[in-house]
Each structure stands twice: as C-alpha cells, then as structure tokens.
Length: 543
Image 1 (cartoon, rainbow, N blue to C red):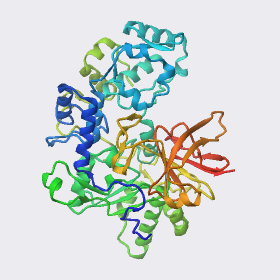
Image 2: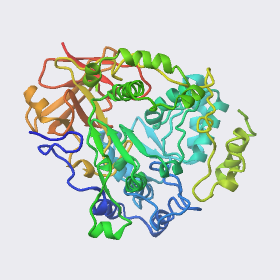
Image 3: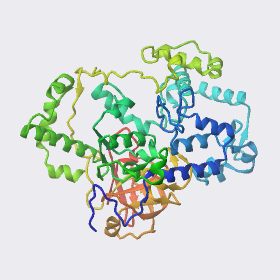
Image 4: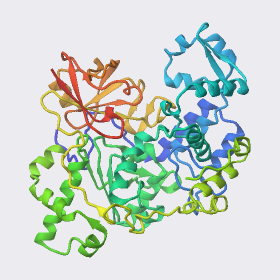
C-alpha cells in the first residue's frame, strides 16, 4: 500500500468519508433532538446561545462573537445544551424500583438516559436503594459529616461544566471550611498548561485572543481534535485557509475536523461547492512525539539561520526570551534520526443572597480580582466578550528572569522512552457523541465508528505482527505495583489508522486500567511523571 501519509487517509481502515460540519452535523443535532425531546424553553435557550445577553455554551466555553451568526452553536454545543435541558425526569419512583447493585451494572449512557433528578437522594445501605430526602435534611447530614472531618483530609470535586458563579461559591466554601483541594474534570485538560505555561511565560493560559486568528499566517496543531472538542473554531480555520493562511497538524489520529470542513451556514457549500481543505500537512506522530516535533522545528530554524540568515528575529529574542543559547546548544547535538524515530479577599458570607442572584456573585469576583474583573456585571454582555488582560500577551513576562523561558528538552518523547520490542502505548479518546464522561450516543461520526464503545483501535500492520484478528476480543489489564488491580475486558480489536506501537480506546471506559493484555503472558507499566491522566502516558512491556 502506497500513500502520502501527510495528506491521505489509510484506505483499509474505518474512517469518515465526508468533511466535518455539513449535513452530518445537522443529522447529529437532529438525532439528539429526537432522543431528548427538549421543551420550547430549551430550544429558545439554544437559539440564544453564545449571543450577547444569551446563554454561554457549557461545552467548550466558546467566546460570544461580536457579530453572531443566526445559529451561533455547533453540533456538540447543541448536544450539550439539549442534553442538559432534557425533558426526561428521574423521580424517587425510579430509585424505589432499582437497587444500587442493579444500577452499577448500567452503562454511563443508560444511567443518564433515566433523566434529571427531581429530589435530593440519600443512599440507604439496609435496603440498597436511594431514597428521597428534603434539602434541609441533605445539607444537615453533609454539614454534620464535614464537622467530623479534618478539612485538609477532604476533597471538593465538581464538574468542569459547573457555571462560573457556581464554581466560585464552591471554592469559596471550601476555603472558608479550611482547604483548597479543589480538583475538577477540567484538570485533565488544563493542568499541564496551567503549570507549564506559568513557568515559561508567567501566565497560566495562552496569550491569544480571538481576533489574533484574523491575522496569523500559520497555525500548528498538536493533539487537538477541533471537530469534536471545539467545532465552532472550524469557522475561523476555514477563514484562515481562505485568506492564504496555512495549517499543519501533528496528531496520532487523522481527525476529520482538521482535514476538511463544510460550513453549515453557507447554503452554497452545503449544496454545490466543495469542502474547504484545512491541514496542508497532517503528520501522524507517535503519542508523546510532540516534543520531538517541536525540537525538530526549532533545530531546523537554527540551521536555516546559520546557512541563510534573516530567519530569526534576534531583536525580539533578546528582548523577550531567556535560555535561547542553551536551547540551541542542546538541539545542535540532537541527531535527526533520533528525532524522526521519536516522533485573596474573604467577603462576608451571604449564601442565600448569592445563590438567589448571580450578579451578586459576580460582584465577588470584582472584590477578589479587582484588576481582571472590574465592572464585571457591566461588561458581562459586551458583544464579543471582554478581555481580562494577559501580561504575557503584552510581553510582560512574570517569570524569575523577567523574560519568556526557552526550555531545552531532556527527552524527545513525553513518554520518557520509546516503546521497544512488544511494548505499545495507549491513547484514550472521547467520541463525537461525548462530553468528558457524558455519553450522548454511540456514533463517533467523524472517525467513521459506530456501535459499541468497547473497542481497541490498532493499525492492521500492528495487528498482524501481534497475531490479532479483526473482531477478536481482548482485555486491558494493569500490572502497576501500586496495590490497586485495574482491568477492563471485552474490547473488540478494530483496525484503524494509527501509528505503529500504539493502540486507542475510549475514555472513560479505559480509565480504570493501565496496560494492554493482548494474547501475551502479562505486561508491566512504566508511568511517566506528568499532570494529566496517566493512562495517556503509559508504556507496556511484556515480561
């Protein structure tokens, strides 16, 4: 089989044959509408979504554009809103009929399909049922338990979908109680940047604002699936390509959302005009290979500078960065063959007032962060959103050196080492019908996958080397010696376009385990230090 891996899909594996967006996205919205049967009020919320004075999408927190489209929501934003505002209700009668032991056998999707809770529920271990209680009873029991505990021994967890005002009061309550152990489901996505960027730029978030993409000439993507994670961004990528900008992607999977796009809000493109190509080059690096890719880019720039000159803006580098010489020295010693192989204030506590009026909570933001949230309520519905400011964007580097820190890699793979022999690396995925652990359905449309989520993706060549057959059922088993046994069984081998020595499985079904037990004796893990979930960074070695 011959193909240009930078532009072409492997034809002998499952994949989505259409562009992202287009009629497929409309059918995806139609499917969730028929399933959840939203009320008229829910639909009205959807049509005001991401518009001035309207509802901010809870899916990817997309900015409200200053000049909104008639429909300012994407497929996944519509799914999130409709799912949250479902007309289905889960009453105490449901829990009277179902024991907790039985419910433990249900999938996440089926549990959520039961609908939204209508009452506080408390578990009764004698009957193995959840039973309804009043809010006063619930808060009284929670308060009594918290008074028994040492505050620092507790963890206050919340969903990443919690609204801004809700999350603020939650963290305030935790700090007044006596701790700041406040993880949420967003940690997996953002903790590496909040730690890593803070060290090198002095800011825990990226320095770009939305309008920057109107002027950039080149966008480099590293491991971001726009089609499922932030589909609204596809419009900006389309505009970038149409004005002559270029997009290069580094990612193990060929994601449709970074290949081509049909704009559902352009009638001509929905009917007669071709899809817009997005990524000019698509490089399927191995998991963890982004370090090597960036090292190679920087190494090549230094080489061009020395051979041609005029490539690097040295005035900018000297004024705004630190460690460039050390970086160049390390990169100079790297071998190209090795690179290619690796590829605050505590306000008076007024809970009842605050929960009854979110504008009062936003006033607390201004008290806590006066520089960033001055006149928060007045600016809340500014068309296009309001800019909180970012020192790194103004080239004010809040680092020890006072400049942006150039860091030289001490490894070429985020795994710490490349797989050897029978080792494989697991990457965990979420589908197009999923938000974090919420499963809307079983159609991963943009990857051409449909049906059971209990599958193990692996490329055909790797299947042949390991003696596996399409449809064969295998188990995932962790042998990390940490005193916890982790395993997931019943995963069906599925051929997919992936790099060698890696496999893929859906999150959260793959969350409990580490290593992959194919038809081999057993496997041992080598975990890599990092802030995101370890199941994305595990090497398996047969022993």
